[in-house]
Image (cartoon, rainbow, N blue to C red; front, side, top):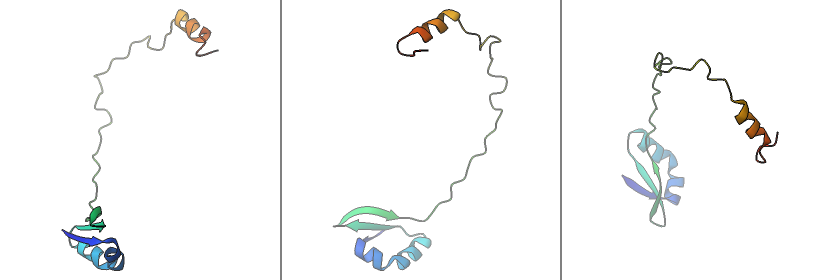
Length: 83
């Protein structure tokens, strides 16, 4: 891995990019402290997802959307959530 200061990197960017394209990694430094790395681009492959992977494993109660009138009353009469 080669190290270039910012000025060298700016003046030789095309050359540095050609090195990176060949697989080499370049470190760019400012005041002899590394601040960035130029590395070859890697394509990310997306994993295919199976949409029905939980089919048959989750049970939903028939009254899942039923609500309790007492809880509703407490919710709307509270000072936190004025109805």
